[in-house]
Image (cartoon, rainbow over the protein chains, first blue to last red):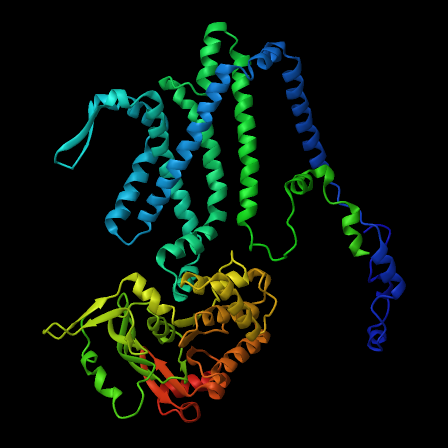
Length: 338
Length: 275
C-alpha cells in the first residue's frame, strides 16, 4: 500500500495498559484512509518482456505471410472453392462424420463390454483396444486396403456351415471402404477408452440410488449414468473428432480423393505446391474452428446442474475477453473494497 | 445360495391372529471376501413400526439395510417384505428340499420400487432438477408425467421445500438435498422406508431439519428401518432398537430398555462412548 503508514504505527509507542481501557487498536481516521487507499499493483517486468517478445515474433509471422510473394495468395484464392477441392472437402467431411458415428457407437459397445460382469466380454474388449492401439493407423489402412491378398473371397453364411452370399474382397474393399473400416476400427478403440473413463467418473451411489427407486438397468445407464458421464466424455471426444478430421488425410496414401489428395492431384500438375497446401490448411483450420465452437456449446449444455449459482454462465466472448491480459480485471472490479 | 433351513417354516407363523411382520429377516449372512459382515441376522419389523439399528462402525448395519432392497446379495438366509421373498423365488415343487431361483433384474426392480431408500450421501441425480429427481421413479414405473409432477409438488411441500422444483441439487444445502432425497423415495408410495445414516454427512445445524421430516414420517405410520448415530432420535422415535456388533444382533427391544440398561457388554461400551 502506498502513501499510508503501517496500520499499527500510531499505537506502537502506547503502553499495553492503555488498550485494556477499550481504545480501538487503530483510530477511525486511519481506517477510513486505509479503506479508500488506491491499490497499486505489483510490477511484473518479466511479463512485459515476455509479451513484447512474443508480439514481435507474431508480427514477424504476419509480415512474412503477407509479404512473401511465394505464398501466392492470389493462387490460394483462385483454387480455394473450386470443384475438385470442394469434392475433396465433401469426402473429408462425410468420411469424418461416418467414421466418428460408427466408431463411437462401437466404442460405447466396447466400453460396456469392458465394464460388464462377463469375463469373456471383458477380455475381448481389452484385447481389441490393446491390439488396435498398438498398430499405427496408417498401417491399419494399408492392411485393410490389401485385405484381398489374405482373404480373396468374403462370404455370408452360417459359421462352419453353408454360405449364402460370396463377394470378391478386392471388389468390395475399394480405397474408400478400406479407409472407412480402418479409421472406424481405430476410432472405436480410442472412443471406448474415453467412454469407459467417463462412466467410471460417475460415482457408484448414482446407480445405486437409481436402482433403489426401481429403475431398470437400461434406464439407469441412459438417464442417470450417461448424462453425468458426458462432461468427462465431451472434451476428450472433441479432441478425438478434431484429430480424426485431420487423420482422414492419411487416406491420400491409398488414393482416396479427400481434401489433401485433391490438392496433391492439382499441384502434381501445376507445381504450385505451397499455395495449394495452404488451401488445404485453411480448410482444415476452418473446419476445426467450427468443431471447437460446437464443442463449447455441447460442453455448456452438459454442464447444467454443475454450477452452484443459478444465473447465466459466462459466454464464449466473455471468457475470451476475460482471458486476454489487455481486458483483464480492472480497477473498477476492485471498487467493492472501498 | 443354498436353501436356508428357515424357509420351509415360514408359513406357520402367520396363524393365530397376529399379523405377519412386514419385514422378516432370517439367518442373513454376507461376506465381503474373507470378512464376514453379517453373521446370521434374524429380525422382524412390524407394519407401522420404526426400527433403529445401532452399532459401532463396521458392525454390518448398512450392509443389513442394503440387503433389504437387494443392493447387496446375501450369501445365505433371506429377506421377506410384505410376504414376498426379496431377490429370489422359492420353488416348493421339487422334492429335494426346494430351490431358490434368483429373480431377473426386472423383477428385482419391481420389488425395489416398493421400498424407499435414503442414502448417507443423498445421491441425488446432479444433472436433473429437484422435480425431475422426484418424478424419475414414478415415470419409469409408468405414471403419467403430469400426475407424477403433481404428487412430487405435494411431497416437496411435505418436506418443507415447496417451490424448489426447478433448483438443481448443487444449489441446495445438504439438509435440503437430503429432504429432496426423502421426497424422491416417498414418490413411489413405498410400504417401507430405509434410512442409511441420513444425517451423518450433514453439518450439525442441518441435522434437525432432516430428523424432523423423518419424525413426521414416523408419526404418519410409515414402517421404517433407520441406521443412525443419533441416540436421542432413536430414543424418541424408535419402537425397537436393535444393537448390532460384528454382524450379529446382540441386543434388541424397546429403546427405554436397550438404551437405558443394555445387558450386553459391547452395547454398554458403545452407548457409553456415544452418549
